[in-house]
Length: 249
Ligand SMILES: [Zn+2]
Image (cartoon, rainbow, N blue to C red; front, side, top):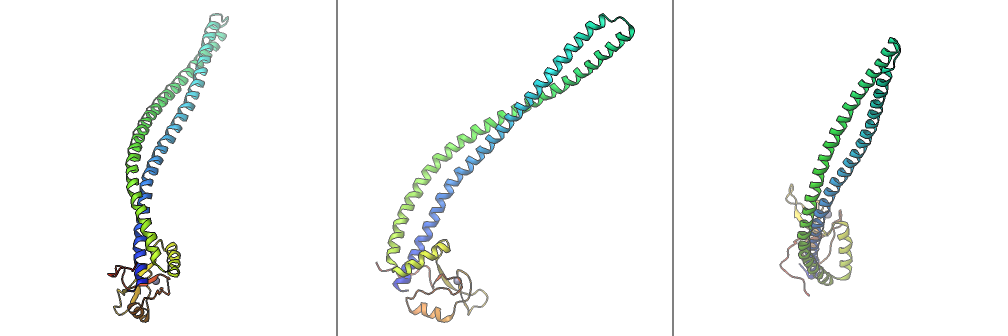
């Protein structure tokens, strides 16, 4: 393999490492983002629960007021009962008292149920608060660990960026431009190895898109230092991605 192709293979190797390392950095950041999202979920659930409690309390207070007014009515009717002049009046007032009493007992049941609801919701709130506290503590620990990991990855990244610059400088201008263009299109996988076809052993294919590569290209790659691209996908074709010969500096 000649110096141009070797320099491209070398650049491809550094490019691959660089992208892998950038992904590692992103993964570390994503762990933190996921944990923050988890905490946000708990916080939203807590806010919703608290809102529910507020509404239940309002409903509870409303029923309490109604209960008071039924009690007042019963007291008033009892006084009226003592002053009833006829049997008819007496029994009419008695009926009213009994109706109000039935209302009262229904209200009391409803109030009790609401108080039970508030109790249950408050327990749920305390559980959520505990979860948030625990997850926040975990987040802090994760942040600490991520910080350390990031420092190490960043060091690797700086080193690789330096290597990338050096490798890129060794590639002639025209081929470098082609490489950069293809790197964008194929997520850094610019070079494709010419491989023997799985099905038909006599046929050679592009390792990037698996379409057939003409024999004259294979011959040319074996004898010359030409940059040839796959007619189908446009990747730069090479015979070997791990050449023994190092690019000349
Ligand atoms: Zn191809």
